[in-house]
Length: 236
Image (tube, rainbow, N blue to C red; front, side):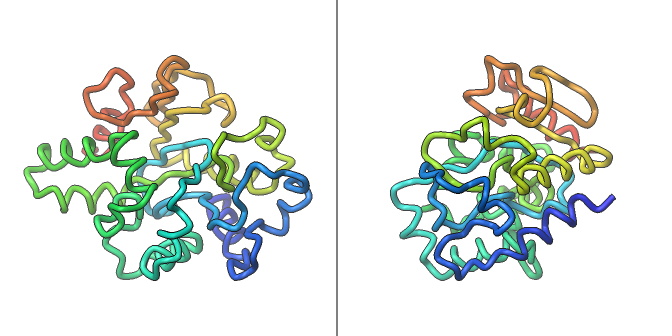
């Protein structure tokens, strides 16, 4: 199977210099949809999805008031471009959302703050007996985020856009099916949209309960359990 490679190849076809950043294969499904900022760089994934041992599945990325300003900055703009085409040569932090040079950005604030990835990093550092930056690099290499819907919005995604009639959604679901053969899949929210049940705990799949999905916290030792599942996989 080549589903992961197909997902990456799909996004390598996007002309990001076009004013509207909708993949040609998604344009028909997106016609008339006004709730998305399609001038922003899509976020189909964050991090090295081939190399990561853990995928964290989310619904879609939000859009903040300062995102356009931040993403116009040279370093962040280049990180976003390289993330989309999965080019991480020489990159210490493949998962850009934990890159310490991007602490001012919305994606850093969301994952390190609300999703508590910073707590996950600190616990890994303690477990390994290493400095925080070394644990941050390891998390950045070995954990990636995959979004079901790649285009960014303030208010979620209508259900009609989450089925396989949207090409990018179909490819993301196929990639997850392939990834489950070798990776841990953690689903903090939108489990049913991905085709899973809530509250599943298996060696290759951990989905939050329905009452936990709103927080989407990956904090180790927390009631959700996703952070502990990730640490167990990283220790294997």
